[in-house]
Length: 109
Image 1: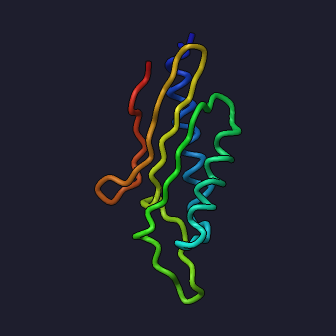
Image 2: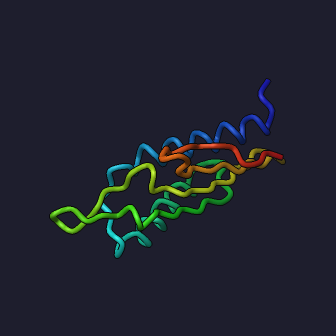
C-alpha cells in the first residue's frame, strides 16, 4: 500500500516533469514572459492534487533570435508546486542548479 505522503511526492514529481516537457521550446520574450508564467501556472493548477503552483522564468536567459523572441529552456524555470493527498502535503521545486534544470523535493509532511 502506498501512503498519502508517498503519493503526494509522486504527484509533485509527475507535475514538474510534465510541465518541463510540455513547455520547453515555447516561444517567449521578456514582454510575454508574465503571460506565459500565468498560463503555465493556470494549466498545472487544474490537475488533480495540486494545491499551489508558482512559476517564474529567468528573463536574463531570454536572448532574442532573428525574429525577436527566445525559446523556453529548462534552465529558465523556477517552479514551486505543492501537492496534497489526504492530509499529506508535499512541496517540490524545479530550478537551475549548476547549469542543470533539477527537480527536487523540498518538504513532505
